[in-house]
Image 1 (cartoon, one colour):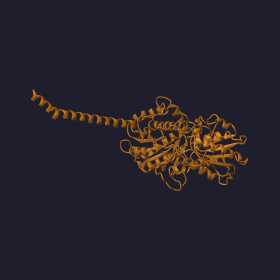
Image 2: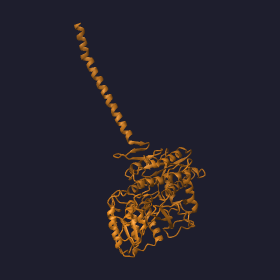
Image 3: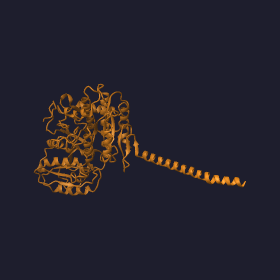
Image 4: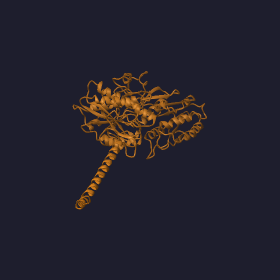
Length: 520
């Protein structure tokens, strides 16, 4: 027995105890390894929002490119996103991909409304291309590209788009780029540097266009909206601004290197040219870096209204170069000005279109001898009341209105609530029409054009047969991709919060000739 006990203890000491330790150690490593795998997996899943979309490093914002029915967590976008997904999945035969680049995760209500309307317009044009073009190919597949609410993650999204030009996706163009911001300017430069055509919807800044000073910094960029300079020329031809009776109010930081604003800056410079000889130096305001925020700018405007009242009695026009939040603050301040018996007309650019849905606008300010007029990108009434003989047509405008009506049903839509007054749906529809028309012209005898063929097509979009008959007016591009003598609706903001169409104005002072051929 003694020998047996000794042998047992020996086996335990030599084998069993170490073996149990080894097994325990092995189990511990397996558990730790499994936990590590689970942690890594959970962390990876936590960064993924949807296929092609992830949370950017250091941010909870979902960015990237979605080709599914992902609505970016924004309920207003859901109906039209689902309609796009259904249309994409129904495509048979040869197709190309077009990306709509917009801040789909916008948190500001005005910006999100802008995105919704541009998304609706782009989809309606996609449907039109795929179902009402007599079977013309290629079909258009629409994907949604989000650089972030402020465009901060544009590099990630641009790189993703650049990887989609191959055989699987056949990305041939990027449309949208609604705001003239520094981030969007960088994104457009990066996309065009990679040979990808870009079609701007509502970008108006002169420094986000080709042809300035004879240079083309964005090869392959085409635009539907006129530049700020052309808008200012159209506004002047309509209002007949007299330099000795006008003052300029502008964004003080518009030309700042880090937080400047191309839209405000180029509008300011266009207005300054109109006011040469004015007896008054311009007055500036200091907005927050994020111009969608209130900041303390209202204090600036209260003081500026005092200066307005101190001007000569003949001064009756105020030119405003700034974003819509600051514009609304200024209008509210003018409603409280001390000289309410004096009549003033405030003239500004297309950012004023946001004010029709701005609940913080003091509409009563417009009842105190204050008129606010602005250059809209488009307006649903512009071509339906006594349209000019050239430059656009009532039939083209009505065709979109009919399609919008169909978009409320199940066959084409539903696309959600529609508001045409800000012009964004109309201009985005026309931009997508320009896109697919250019792609189909470029394809030649092949079903799928190359990137280079698409970006070189814009110089030929003009004339009676190749112009785009847009709902916002004719789109006849010059050799730099800019619309020539594009119709500019002049719109008046009413005290009911609506946008009343006044008249179509023209950068050249008159509509284009029927041939619509830009001069050299």
